[in-house]
Length: 342
Image 1: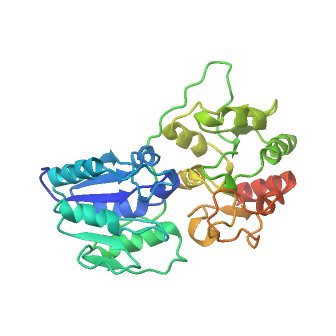
Image 2: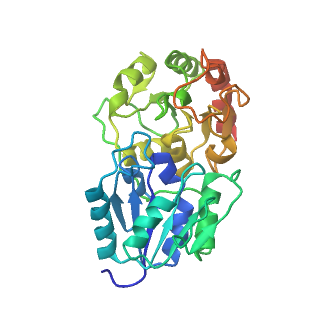
Image 3: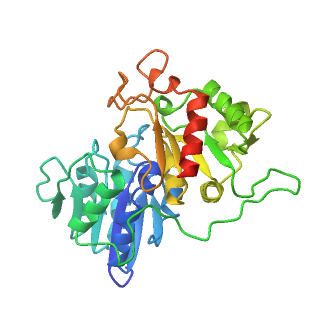
């Protein structure tokens, strides 16, 4: 057991979901001696970037992940024993509006956690000590911070409640004569963790050409599994950084950008966390009021009244993907110039 007041914070889904917990984490850290963050496999790297986190645990949760593992008694027992050995003074369980905190609360209670706080629509019985209720139209960072406050934690004086990452950010290594990474470029991130939220690749490639025609230096970013996509989008006029960056290095690249063009996916929230303006190609399958980039100049593109609105679809349910296919390269150039001017 670690001496002092230890708080376990849990958020078990993806990169963006974890990054928007930043204000909650800093509030908890202001009132705790140690913060241990329980993350899913996709969100653990993001959790390590959050100021206030002392240690990150990774666990694949069967009732949260979109591609969930089977429920295993041995797996649950191992998590229970690990939490029991940590002996946290309390836990704050953060979930999205469509997720229940109660299964994890049951595991934590079984492990002996004496005080547990969460937002819960469902009756929690004795699983929660603080059952917080909240207006679900709040932006996600504010929703999470309201949970911290309900649990008795608040931001320290001078903290503006925006998203943030640890600084200094790492330098991005590149060979002499390689890509120009001096500040002032525009980043286009064509991929998305959910296909329904991605701008069509052909439109992304058109935007690179149009941005280059307008005098913008364009870097195209993506994960290791998106190299073919980023190469096709970058073409001959953009700089392809697909698969070349860790999440911390991506944060550094976004930090040097004049603007970032990105869908509703983790790098949008990472751009907000480094304070860079965002052109948000936002599919309305989830509400922009909750999930748009927070606290930075933003232009929202995409038909927010398209038939897919609020469906939470992972694959686009409407032929032609009209919510985002309706956005043109010219729209993106105008939006980039607007957020840069702002």
